[in-house]
Length: 79
Image 1 (cartoon, rainbow, N blue to C red):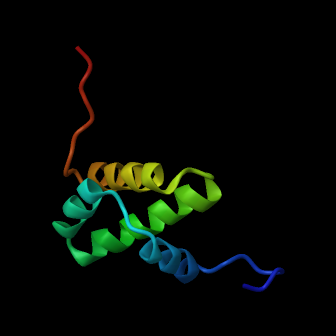
Image 2: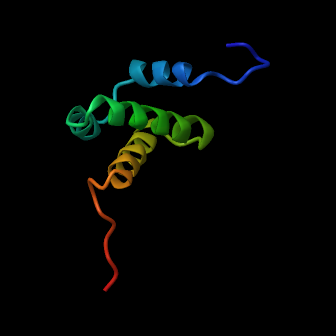
């Protein structure tokens, strides 16, 4: 990594692949199409490195975000 340029998204995606993820997140992720899997990887990397979150937490939040954005889960409605 060049110290004068920020890492590319491919570098973040590489880092995500070298560390094992939570088995539940991994199982749900396998059910998604490749485009949503890529979106998950990008969101998780951003949350982990720019948000300074622990990897498991970043992956869980990224998965929930992708599922919500694409209407696969719905936020709880207020009563």
